[in-house]
Image (cartoon, rainbow, N blue to C red; front, side, top):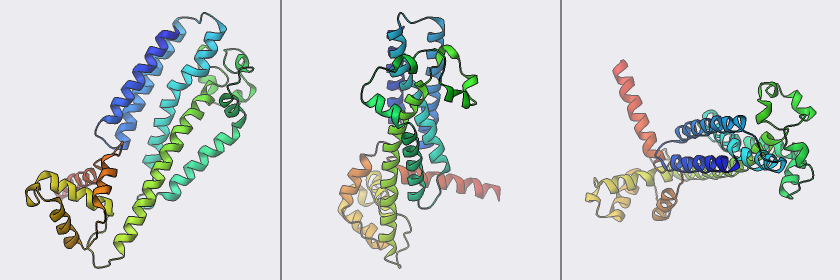
Amino acid sequence: MINTTETLLNRLESQLTYINRQHGDTLWLCREAIKASGNTIVKLKKIILSGDFTSQQEEIYFFKSLKPRFAAWLIYYKKMYEIELGKPQDDNTRYYQKHIKKLQKYNEENNALLQYLRSGSTHLDNAYFTRKEPAIDLYLNPFFFEAEPRFTTSYDYKVARLMANERLYRYLLTRLTESADNQYQKAEVNQNSDSPWSGTKAELIELLYSLHFSGVLYNGTDLSRSAQFIEETFGVSLGQYRRTFIELRNRKKEQTKFNDKLTKSFLFGIDAAEDK
Protein backbone atom coordinates (compact mmCIF):
# COMPACT_ATOMS: atom_id res chain seq x y z
CA MET A 1 0.00 0.00 0.00
CA ILE A 2 2.88 2.38 0.74
CA ASN A 3 4.31 1.87 -2.75
CA THR A 4 0.92 2.71 -4.26
CA THR A 5 0.58 5.93 -2.25
CA GLU A 6 4.14 7.00 -3.06
CA THR A 7 3.42 6.49 -6.77
CA LEU A 8 0.24 8.56 -6.38
CA LEU A 9 2.23 11.36 -4.71
CA ASN A 10 4.81 11.39 -7.52
CA ARG A 11 2.00 11.67 -10.07
CA LEU A 12 0.43 14.57 -8.19
CA GLU A 13 3.70 16.48 -7.96
CA SER A 14 4.38 15.89 -11.67
CA GLN A 15 0.88 17.18 -12.43
CA LEU A 16 1.45 20.28 -10.30
CA THR A 17 4.77 20.94 -12.05
CA TYR A 18 2.97 20.75 -15.40
CA ILE A 19 0.24 23.14 -14.21
CA ASN A 20 2.84 25.65 -13.01
CA ARG A 21 4.43 25.67 -16.45
CA GLN A 22 1.19 26.57 -18.19
CA HIS A 23 0.29 30.06 -19.30
CA GLY A 24 -2.23 31.55 -16.92
CA ASP A 25 -2.63 33.93 -14.03
CA THR A 26 -2.16 32.98 -10.39
CA LEU A 27 -5.87 32.44 -9.68
CA TRP A 28 -6.19 30.06 -12.63
CA LEU A 29 -3.08 28.18 -11.51
CA CYS A 30 -4.46 27.85 -7.97
CA ARG A 31 -7.82 26.55 -9.16
CA GLU A 32 -6.20 23.90 -11.33
CA ALA A 33 -3.80 22.88 -8.55
CA ILE A 34 -6.63 22.70 -6.00
CA LYS A 35 -8.63 20.41 -8.30
CA ALA A 36 -5.62 18.18 -8.92
CA SER A 37 -4.71 17.98 -5.21
CA GLY A 38 -8.29 17.44 -4.07
CA ASN A 39 -8.98 14.68 -6.59
CA THR A 40 -5.74 12.93 -5.65
CA ILE A 41 -6.56 13.04 -1.93
CA VAL A 42 -9.94 11.43 -2.68
CA LYS A 43 -8.06 8.59 -4.42
CA LEU A 44 -5.62 8.38 -1.52
CA LYS A 45 -8.45 8.07 0.98
CA LYS A 46 -10.01 5.20 -0.98
CA ILE A 47 -6.70 3.35 -1.01
CA ILE A 48 -6.26 3.68 2.77
CA LEU A 49 -9.85 2.75 3.62
CA SER A 50 -9.80 -0.30 1.34
CA GLY A 51 -6.69 -1.84 2.88
CA ASP A 52 -4.56 -1.86 5.98
CA PHE A 53 -0.96 -1.21 6.96
CA THR A 54 1.35 -4.16 7.44
CA SER A 55 2.81 -2.73 10.65
CA GLN A 56 2.58 0.18 13.05
CA GLN A 57 5.79 1.60 11.62
CA GLU A 58 4.20 1.67 8.18
CA GLU A 59 1.18 3.47 9.62
CA ILE A 60 3.40 6.04 11.32
CA TYR A 61 5.41 6.57 8.13
CA PHE A 62 2.23 7.22 6.17
CA PHE A 63 0.63 9.69 8.60
CA LYS A 64 3.89 11.43 9.50
CA SER A 65 5.63 11.65 6.14
CA LEU A 66 3.31 10.77 3.26
CA LYS A 67 -0.23 11.99 3.89
CA PRO A 68 0.94 15.46 5.02
CA ARG A 69 2.72 15.94 1.70
CA PHE A 70 -0.55 15.39 -0.17
CA ALA A 71 -2.51 17.66 2.15
CA ALA A 72 0.19 20.35 2.20
CA TRP A 73 -0.21 20.97 -1.53
CA LEU A 74 -3.97 21.41 -1.17
CA ILE A 75 -3.58 23.74 1.81
CA TYR A 76 -0.87 25.73 0.06
CA TYR A 77 -2.85 26.41 -3.09
CA LYS A 78 -6.12 27.09 -1.22
CA LYS A 79 -4.36 29.65 0.98
CA MET A 80 -2.60 31.21 -2.01
CA TYR A 81 -5.93 31.46 -3.82
CA GLU A 82 -7.56 33.18 -0.83
CA ILE A 83 -4.63 35.58 -0.47
CA GLU A 84 -4.53 36.57 -4.14
CA LEU A 85 -8.32 36.86 -4.35
CA GLY A 86 -8.44 39.25 -1.40
CA LYS A 87 -5.45 41.46 -2.15
CA PRO A 88 -6.05 45.21 -2.62
CA GLN A 89 -5.52 46.88 -5.97
CA ASP A 90 -3.01 49.42 -4.68
CA ASP A 91 0.07 48.84 -2.49
CA ASN A 92 0.11 45.18 -1.37
CA THR A 93 3.11 45.47 0.95
CA ARG A 94 1.17 45.65 4.24
CA TYR A 95 -1.28 43.02 3.00
CA TYR A 96 1.46 40.45 2.39
CA GLN A 97 3.20 41.38 5.64
CA LYS A 98 -0.05 40.71 7.52
CA HIS A 99 -0.26 37.21 6.06
CA ILE A 100 3.38 36.51 6.87
CA LYS A 101 2.65 37.41 10.49
CA LYS A 102 -0.26 34.94 10.48
CA LEU A 103 2.07 32.17 9.33
CA GLN A 104 4.60 33.09 11.99
CA LYS A 105 1.89 33.09 14.67
CA TYR A 106 0.72 29.59 13.70
CA ASN A 107 4.29 28.29 13.74
CA GLU A 108 4.86 29.83 17.18
CA GLU A 109 1.70 28.21 18.51
CA ASN A 110 2.90 24.85 17.20
CA ASN A 111 6.58 25.33 17.94
CA ALA A 112 6.86 22.13 20.00
CA LEU A 113 5.66 20.02 17.07
CA LEU A 114 7.85 21.98 14.66
CA GLN A 115 10.95 21.32 16.76
CA TYR A 116 9.95 17.67 17.15
CA LEU A 117 9.84 17.26 13.38
CA ARG A 118 12.99 19.24 12.66
CA SER A 119 15.00 17.32 15.25
CA GLY A 120 14.01 14.00 13.73
CA SER A 121 12.52 12.81 17.03
CA THR A 122 10.41 9.66 17.08
CA HIS A 123 9.54 9.04 20.75
CA LEU A 124 6.03 10.52 20.38
CA ASP A 125 5.25 9.02 16.97
CA ASN A 126 2.98 6.39 18.46
CA ALA A 127 0.80 9.08 20.08
CA TYR A 128 0.95 11.57 17.21
CA PHE A 129 0.69 9.44 14.08
CA THR A 130 -1.38 6.33 14.78
CA ARG A 131 -5.14 6.07 14.66
CA LYS A 132 -5.74 5.79 18.37
CA GLU A 133 -7.67 8.03 20.75
CA PRO A 134 -7.21 11.57 19.36
CA ALA A 135 -5.57 14.38 21.31
CA ILE A 136 -8.03 16.32 23.48
CA ASP A 137 -7.47 19.61 21.62
CA LEU A 138 -8.83 18.06 18.43
CA TYR A 139 -12.26 17.80 20.01
CA LEU A 140 -12.28 21.61 20.09
CA ASN A 141 -12.12 21.67 16.30
CA PRO A 142 -15.69 21.55 14.89
CA PHE A 143 -14.46 19.91 11.68
CA PHE A 144 -12.86 17.02 13.55
CA PHE A 145 -16.18 15.21 13.88
CA GLU A 146 -16.60 15.22 10.10
CA ALA A 147 -13.23 13.54 9.60
CA GLU A 148 -12.91 9.85 8.78
CA PRO A 149 -11.27 8.20 11.86
CA ARG A 150 -9.46 5.61 9.72
CA PHE A 151 -7.91 8.41 7.64
CA THR A 152 -7.00 10.79 10.47
CA THR A 153 -4.51 10.97 13.34
CA SER A 154 -3.96 13.60 16.00
CA TYR A 155 -1.23 15.52 14.21
CA ASP A 156 -1.02 14.69 10.50
CA TYR A 157 -3.03 17.79 9.56
CA LYS A 158 -0.79 20.04 11.65
CA VAL A 159 2.28 18.59 9.95
CA ALA A 160 0.69 19.32 6.56
CA ARG A 161 -0.15 22.85 7.67
CA LEU A 162 3.44 23.48 8.77
CA MET A 163 4.71 22.17 5.41
CA ALA A 164 2.28 24.42 3.55
CA ASN A 165 3.30 27.39 5.69
CA GLU A 166 6.93 27.02 4.61
CA ARG A 167 5.89 27.21 0.96
CA LEU A 168 3.51 30.10 1.62
CA TYR A 169 6.23 31.98 3.48
CA ARG A 170 8.57 31.74 0.48
CA TYR A 171 5.73 32.71 -1.86
CA LEU A 172 4.76 35.75 0.23
CA LEU A 173 8.37 36.92 0.48
CA THR A 174 8.59 36.84 -3.31
CA ARG A 175 5.31 38.77 -3.60
CA LEU A 176 6.50 41.24 -0.99
CA THR A 177 9.68 41.90 -2.95
CA GLU A 178 7.72 42.37 -6.18
CA SER A 179 5.33 44.76 -4.43
CA ALA A 180 8.22 46.83 -3.04
CA ASP A 181 9.89 46.91 -6.48
CA ASN A 182 6.66 48.07 -8.13
CA GLN A 183 6.23 50.86 -5.61
CA TYR A 184 9.82 51.98 -6.18
CA GLN A 185 9.38 51.93 -9.95
CA LYS A 186 6.13 53.89 -9.73
CA ALA A 187 7.81 56.49 -7.55
CA GLU A 188 10.70 56.65 -10.01
CA VAL A 189 8.33 57.17 -12.95
CA ASN A 190 6.25 59.73 -11.07
CA GLN A 191 9.31 61.89 -10.47
CA ASN A 192 8.75 63.09 -14.03
CA SER A 193 5.34 64.71 -13.70
CA ASP A 194 5.23 65.43 -17.44
CA SER A 195 5.28 61.72 -18.31
CA PRO A 196 1.92 60.33 -19.51
CA TRP A 197 2.96 56.84 -18.32
CA SER A 198 1.37 55.90 -14.98
CA GLY A 199 2.41 52.26 -14.92
CA THR A 200 5.64 50.77 -13.61
CA LYS A 201 8.95 50.75 -15.41
CA ALA A 202 8.81 46.93 -15.57
CA GLU A 203 5.45 47.15 -17.35
CA LEU A 204 6.85 49.61 -19.87
CA ILE A 205 9.81 47.32 -20.51
CA GLU A 206 7.44 44.39 -21.01
CA LEU A 207 5.59 46.53 -23.55
CA LEU A 208 8.88 47.43 -25.25
CA TYR A 209 9.83 43.78 -25.73
CA SER A 210 6.33 42.85 -26.87
CA LEU A 211 6.47 45.49 -29.59
CA HIS A 212 10.03 44.50 -30.48
CA PHE A 213 9.36 40.75 -30.72
CA SER A 214 6.16 41.33 -32.71
CA GLY A 215 8.15 43.32 -35.26
CA VAL A 216 5.92 46.40 -35.20
CA LEU A 217 8.76 48.74 -34.17
CA TYR A 218 11.54 49.01 -36.76
CA ASN A 219 10.55 45.53 -37.99
CA GLY A 220 11.92 44.05 -34.78
CA THR A 221 15.50 44.56 -35.90
CA ASP A 222 16.75 47.31 -33.59
CA LEU A 223 16.00 46.91 -29.86
CA SER A 224 18.13 49.88 -28.83
CA ARG A 225 16.34 52.19 -31.24
CA SER A 226 12.97 50.85 -30.05
CA ALA A 227 13.98 51.49 -26.43
CA GLN A 228 14.98 55.04 -27.31
CA PHE A 229 11.62 55.57 -29.04
CA ILE A 230 9.74 54.34 -25.93
CA GLU A 231 11.81 56.57 -23.63
CA GLU A 232 11.24 59.65 -25.78
CA THR A 233 7.54 58.93 -26.30
CA PHE A 234 6.69 58.33 -22.64
CA GLY A 235 9.36 60.52 -21.06
CA VAL A 236 10.68 57.64 -18.92
CA SER A 237 14.23 56.38 -18.61
CA LEU A 238 14.19 52.58 -18.97
CA GLY A 239 17.55 52.18 -17.28
CA GLN A 240 19.05 48.70 -17.61
CA TYR A 241 16.09 47.33 -19.53
CA ARG A 242 17.99 44.25 -20.75
CA ARG A 243 18.59 43.14 -17.16
CA THR A 244 14.93 43.79 -16.32
CA PHE A 245 13.92 41.62 -19.29
CA ILE A 246 16.02 38.75 -17.92
CA GLU A 247 14.19 39.09 -14.60
CA LEU A 248 10.83 39.07 -16.40
CA ARG A 249 11.88 36.03 -18.42
CA ASN A 250 12.92 34.17 -15.27
CA ARG A 251 9.54 34.63 -13.60
CA LYS A 252 8.14 31.23 -12.69
CA LYS A 253 4.62 32.56 -13.10
CA GLU A 254 2.95 35.43 -14.94
CA GLN A 255 5.75 36.03 -17.44
CA THR A 256 3.33 38.15 -19.46
CA LYS A 257 1.66 39.87 -16.51
CA PHE A 258 1.27 43.29 -18.15
CA ASN A 259 0.20 41.87 -21.51
CA ASP A 260 -2.44 39.78 -19.72
CA LYS A 261 -3.62 42.93 -17.95
CA LEU A 262 -3.91 44.74 -21.29
CA THR A 263 -5.86 41.87 -22.83
CA LYS A 264 -8.32 41.74 -19.93
CA SER A 265 -8.78 45.51 -20.03
CA PHE A 266 -9.36 45.46 -23.79
CA LEU A 267 -11.96 42.66 -23.55
CA PHE A 268 -13.66 44.45 -20.67
CA GLY A 269 -13.78 47.62 -22.76
CA ILE A 270 -15.34 45.72 -25.68
CA ASP A 271 -18.03 44.27 -23.41
CA ALA A 272 -18.70 47.68 -21.86
CA ALA A 273 -19.00 49.30 -25.31
CA GLU A 274 -21.47 46.63 -26.46
CA ASP A 275 -23.65 47.25 -23.39
CA LYS A 276 -24.06 50.93 -24.27
